Image 1 (cartoon, rainbow, N blue to C red):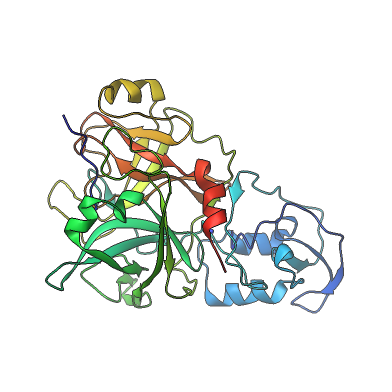
Image 2 (spheres, rainbow, N blue to C red):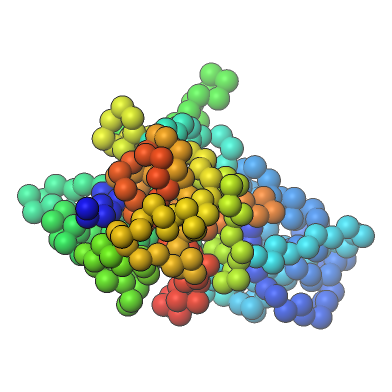
Length: 371
């Protein structure tokens, strides 16, 4: 039996800095005397960073608070010192956008729920989710894969979404749709106590470069490892409440323990329809690798270092057109891309699905990004 792919079918982390520099005297936004410290040692600004809504005013205040133009110190802010401090999330890596004195933002979402067996998301949940659009031979466009934003210029997806016979049959990748919620409406809006509140219009960006992993072998069911690709967008995105990169794990991130829940989201097949117009989510458990190997025995070779297994609950699963989207978890209140939807057997069966382990590929991601 052939293995069926799920066919194409970054807090504001203000750039995380591990090395602490000597403290410098500076002037805070309110005009008082302060010290130039990591944002993680400045509770007032860190609380803004971790707030439910990242408004333009908050972004402006955080940028004004920056006290170093050194790109290696872009997470340093001028803070009126208090005795309280916070520890840095040691398991999060944020990919720099290489813009020097700008602020990298990742892993935050607005609070303002279909995937198979899932529920609609809220309007600004998972603002790193993107849709990949392909041009058919007749000139029409189709949305066949997902992905996720990791900084202002790069998207991560599955390699099988950009390479292989399935992609050749669909058509060439031409567009990345960012800040989407409901594909039937633009802009997306919701009712807030009788007042209609709308997001910015969806952002469509072309594809400047596609970088599949060099060790990914397309159209080889017996080996689906290294199923990861980078997409360099044709321009930088503007960070907002509805467009936000997700954080990447560090390369030594241990991952969510077996039995605990992680989340998947996307616009893929649902119980009622072949494609959902609304972004959906579902929580699924991490599955032991022993169980996963038994389920895929004789079908494909699996690697616990490069892959994660999750799901196995009836009708709760990633499905067609969810490929390339993230398997996500939370660390210190920030969302991390732990996996990439890769492949499975059927949809919503009591068999786990396989995800590319992102932490294993962080060095590869870093080495393949450019300013």
